[in-house]
Length: 547
Image (cartoon, rainbow, N blue to C red):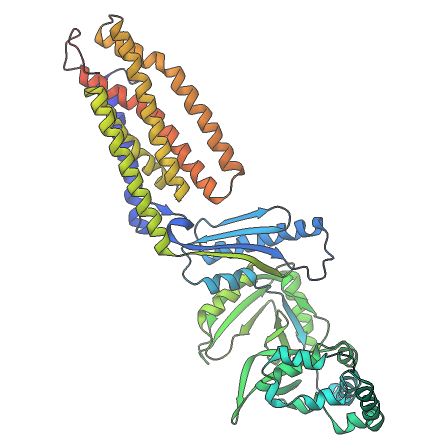
């Protein structure tokens, strides 16, 4: 096929044109010649771990949980639009996430960490809770004591740590007198009398602005949350009822308030039956919303429930927070919507729709390690890599031409073709160039030069043995072939192993090295030989060559 010099040169021109076109197309599409990795363009590196505060999870359970988390996070990030993210399991209980070119790191972390557990619960009247409030107050007084509750002022609720230390202070009295005072106080104020005088929880509640809700002043929310977290308080709740906070701040008069919803404890439907979720904007009220659609089974269940509860309120709960609680005006089918509230950016609605489509995480995850690479550091790496590459190539060119003369110049021409092929291959495969990848590129340049050195030395031996110029060139390429093939194949196998078992930077090195090996093999044995044939075509068989 390549017996004639013209066919060889035509094929080289074709390969060079394809490589050049790949670079140009990548530049036109992305604005960069090559796609750069985290260490070159900046980004974030996270190490995630499943939360296990009690230390009860087995290693097998953690490993299974991390596998499920990996699938969900990969789906979220793919929809988020990050190109070539690295999401890789480390050991049995950790997950590495590397995102290159991230502009909003907080948004990315929120999408990764958000549980997105969606539930649908019925809003209940407050009547049962109104009757239970005195019982809740008595349980707080009996648990904490009168002095602790009286010491809680509205002026200290902003510091939750101080409140926690104050509420749960279990220090023993320092002296017999202190013990006697404590006994005297307990005798004077019984728990029942204190409950009648003090209403620690119910005094924080105001009548809600809709059915099934209380209102709590924003400055009182921390102390209310501490009360609600007490086991004694939860046992005093009416049967099968819970209280959950609303997500929106409500302004009334001169103050800000949070809604506290009275809900049925059990969910009649969860996000597991969700099939799709899209973000949009309500044209009537100009507020962001997320429209969702259930599966066929979920739609039937939703329809039966809504049909039986027309006129009641339905709470849409996301991660134990009520996103909205619309009234059920008619039977609802497989579609619904979550109103995000006035002033919520459409971007937040898109993020919520994204995590709902990907599904809820099976467990809470925490970030145990976080590193951020700034674009300036990446630019320094690029500049240093370019400088090292140019210096290396310049020294190679000088040595080759000085030592091998015209043959060295031909090798330099083949080396230029090699560099273009490597860059075109990286662009065509949409591979990511990293700092280790630059090292792999420079290493493969050395291997390409080494192949030419083997060939030239073999040609010299043939010329010293008295062979004709054309014969010496043919014999030199033929006898050097086995050594070049062995060296390239063994290095290629090593690169493939690194790619299979390595992490991001190691994989970047392996990809660049693999492309470089293939390109160096082609340039040394085909391009250099074609250039030699072109050089020899203008000479007589007896003319000497510079090598």
